[in-house]
Length: 284
Image 1: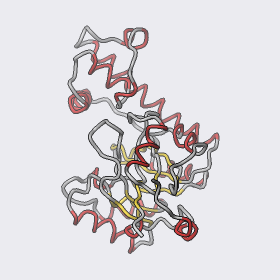
Image 2 (image 1 turned 135 degrees about the horizontal axis):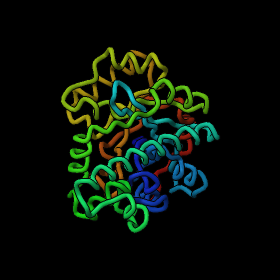
Image 3 (image 1 turned 120 degrees about the vertical axis):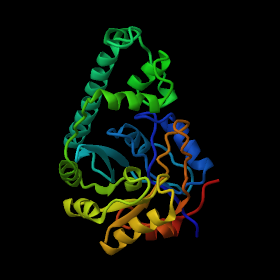
């Protein structure tokens, strides 16, 4: 029984290109049986999907990807099966507000260099097309021919020395546990592209209370990376997840890639697997 899974993807609610309905059509087309939408610091699309008719045989796990700052670097935690609460909504809204303020500071700095851009123009004249993916500040610069792509944007942003400091991972874990979510360290291979996250750093994440690790991701380009995180999770009784980090038509990451199947993972605490298998049938 090949049950295909993708537990990491983004919609137009954060920086993807697909609406909820478009995403569900792609889920069906790619024959994904269990999926989660993990938008950055918003549960808008996850909440909408709860009330949607899913493709036949398909199961949805509500999710969100929450930003944190650890050792002056941005890290992400994916949280599944959260209980929607005012406290969670306030927490992720605060993250979004901090990111927006950071973007405004960057636009203001760039207005001293590029007379074509300004905060006044951004707020009063610029109309973004969210179906392009990315985010408004990025698209503002691209549409004004200041930067050609996200790479140039981040290169210039890094050179400004601006700092974006989110809440600590401990605070993210605390709020996630309060809303009864299961917490995974998202794509550790993203942070260590050529090698693997040192065990002492993985121990830090384990000790603060994560429930699992996203071992299978498009960033684990070498098989030894998948194996390393998989073995660490197994040894430390952590769940194992995987996903494409697909943003629709943006960034070139395809839904369901890498191909991940249920027998590779350990997500027993996220879904009633016995009941799922009993009623499993692939959608047409």
